[in-house]
Length: 260
Image 1 (cartoon, one colour):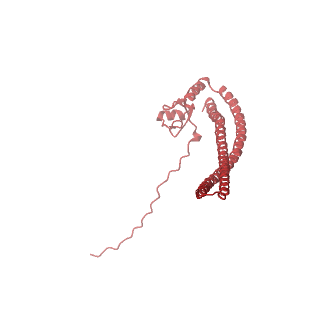
Image 2: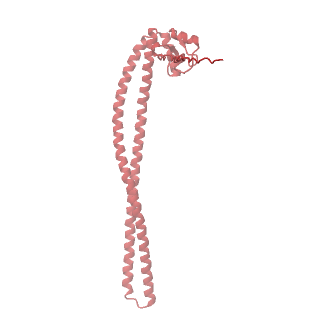
Image 3: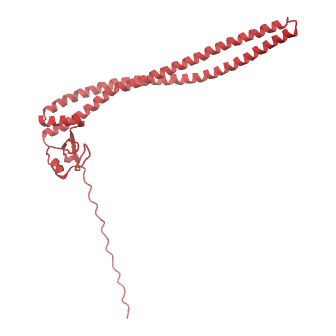
């Protein structure tokens, strides 16, 4: 394998890593945005639960006020009943008292339902607050990890770019132009030839092309167009042939001749 091709192999390894690093760096803001959005959603869940609990508390305060009003009415009607002079007036006051007592029972039932709803909302709020606290800590850890990861990846990217620039100067211009043209459309410009197959597209090579690749000639895969290179050190070690077990010779048993 000539030196330019060796440099080209190293260049492609660097190019692949550069692409991966850039994708990783570019993906971090999206990842952070997603967990921040979840944090906002959890914050809204807590706020909604808070409002629900507060609304039920306000409802019960209003109900308690209505119950007190009805109790005051009953006390007033009972005071009046002691001074009435006719049965009609007495029965009318008793009717008002009965109506107020029924209204109190109704209001108390509504109040009990409100208390049950409050208990449910408070359980939801407690879980939402716990989830929010946990996710806040997770977001902070992810932010710190992202800052550290971005710094490390950017340093590695800078080093790779310097290495790539040096490698490109060592490669034949025509070969480099060919590589750049293929890589721009295929993602990679080189493919390892192994086992009479292009490892870039997994297609088999014709025997003639396979022989040319093994002889170090610069050829392109007929299927994907990538430049092929052959490295005998990457060929799998063939397994030793398994021989058939030797058969044991059978020892003949002589039978006595029968008399005629």
